[in-house]
Image 1: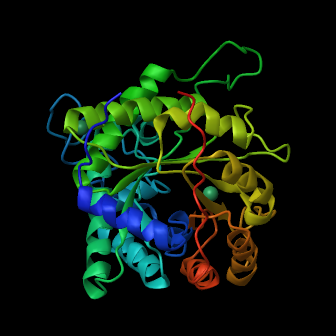
Image 2: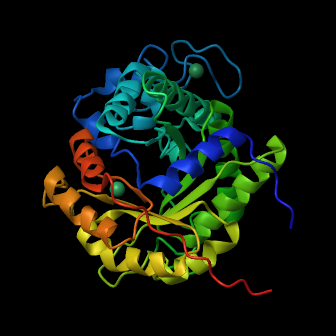
Length: 366
Ligand SMILES: [Zn+2]
Ligand SMILES: [Zn+2]
């Protein structure tokens, strides 16, 4: 099978050179930082969405006005919308993570799929949110790299899991029911991925995967987008272990997870979210042994406490992840829910100078 050329061969060469030299640092949580700003409904809406609908768009092309029928939908909590209504704030968060020592920053697009945006009746924004989300992160990375050209910085175009699962029924009384399908997810991911590519992402990451079938739809869609663009970006895949038995929601161990997605030949496979670093150790160890590609890990700042917050300090988290690095398990490391620039700074300091995991060459079946 021949593969498409890289869309940005110089960026890929620079990323691969950096991965060969050191453990690269991914940024921390976007949501945690947004939360600190205590934004209200009006902040989320900005001018364009002041009435709850998009002043620049209506489904049938009508001019909005009193009684036009587009009732104002609440946008508070729609963090991805801030890319359009508070770009200064999102760019500031990217800059804070880059200052803290992140080599790669994740776009503010975790929920920017039609499936997730339907909750806010903003499905028409998918392409724009992904393109602008990538462009904001691109601008922040370019600025940091201009300030220190010896240190390349990379944009991770993020594709989240969506709020639905293709493998499992959300209704215990109807086990055969599915709230979404492979085809519906593939359409949603195609739209999102094309925006990320257009906005200037260096790599794409399918992350927080709790259902492998959702991830397969994302990877299928990504291939279509690359085909249409006439070139590809490196792809990172990161799953989520959701319970103490060490399985994803769709029931796979870390090892099974790798083998079911290996055909996509990702630049990295890893785990993020849900558990704190300590509980991910055994699963990262497994991935490190079986995966003939780079391994990443960006856990939460510990397990959520009774109030839904995260208690692990930057020092705690960095100490645990430093041990992963000393054991030779890591190529990329960062933070998920509850982590802040202070966590990323501690992490960057903790792994500095430690060699990256050596990617094993496994015997190919001919
Ligand atoms: Zn209207
Ligand atoms: Zn998380």
